Image (cartoon, rainbow, N blue to C red; front, side):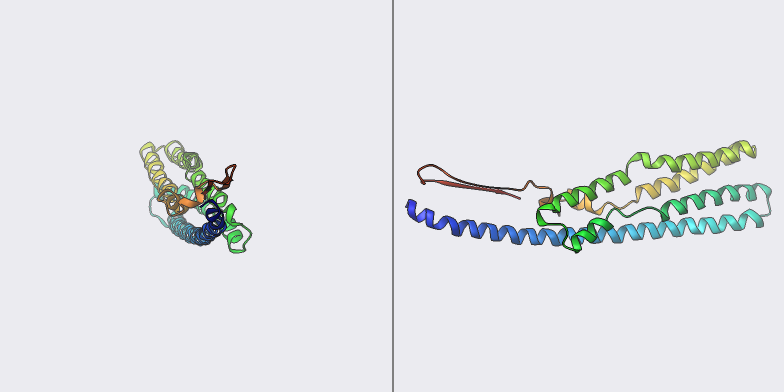
Length: 215
């Protein structure tokens, strides 16, 4: 019985490793798809908010010279400055997916390194959605509101400018895509977060063997 088990052990090991390689190939495909999906959603987010701020900039630039009321022209100049800053910030926002996606597509990321690639992208997504990223927009909106409230002696209009600006800032922050983190959380990339280990133990005497694999 022991000799028969010894003869079956290599076949069992080969079968298990073959299944593992197949699973890792599937994991590599799922990781590549998740990164591609993230790239598309980031491009959509960036394009959408660039268009929103671009329209706001054009409208405020027009109103700053063509509006009939002096107060409206003043507010439009403040709004144009805020829109220009927001547009520049969005346009310069880097994608957290580009580098890892290119590395995976080029075969530069080995199978055993896929979990680390997913970890890096997930951390970047979390950093992009960190509350501290609201601070620059809050500072710009607060400054714009104070210019109207104090500089033009219209506190109510300054408060409205600050509130509407914060609404836009909050929505822009909240809509930052997180497809990789969500795929990881719902189990689509569950294997990418698992510990990878192979251990084969043959006990003294050859009577028993244990095979432990975790991926």
